[in-house]
Length: 287
Image 1 (cartoon, rainbow, N blue to C red):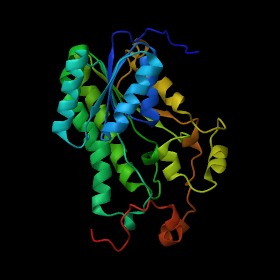
Image 2 (image 1 turned 90 degrees about the horizontal axis):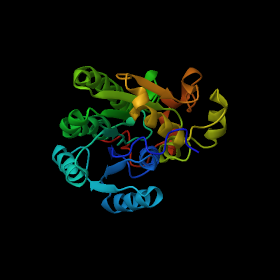
Image 3 (image 1 turned 180 degrees about the vertical axis):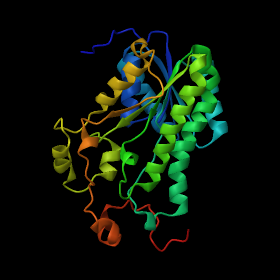
Image 4 (image 1 turned 60 degrees about the horizontal axis):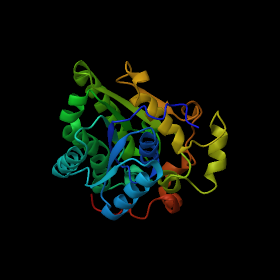
């Protein structure tokens, strides 16, 4: 049973990038269950429509699929227009589109690095630019889904660390510039969340048990843990909270150790090739 009133978001509209699956899907579903209508954005039009239908079915609230690539400013403007035509406004924005894989810097091509920066950081910027006039009108709020990787040097994660550090900084500036207009902006930085594509892709073999032992609260995070924080930040109870970064990780950031053997993984990346996403360009690729 939710601790939040069942209608706290009645009449509100949330616009979410990355809402087709994973953490962002969970956030949108929770908000819809509390009365919110939604628009979800992603590149997979078919998958997006299926997710929108499932969200409507599980919550009895309207969900509009808006196929768009966050890297394309014009596509994001069109997605926002579709949302406005359907619902008339935007109260909340979740910037959650992201991409990641394992790769040491020496095997990371310029194109691979650029792609993650474009999805995570430029995609967040494009989302803000397209939605801001409407969020100003509603005196609404932004929540950006970041990560904890860049709060220390995490091997094989240079690309996403750089992107998420930029997201954190962008949110802080947004909070300062738009606060006088009544707009809030905050960041949620999830720790290791089980049953997500990210953990499946980034986790090492037999790594989950060892990881859970590092987490002071003794378990992997759940998507619902992040959804609960998002609901709070969007609620009126958080009306004086802006420009903040909330680490939601069961205390893991205080005990975090690299999931890869250090320094072996950085001195001899080839010996850990089985951990690297096969789409990552090899060391011999031209930059």
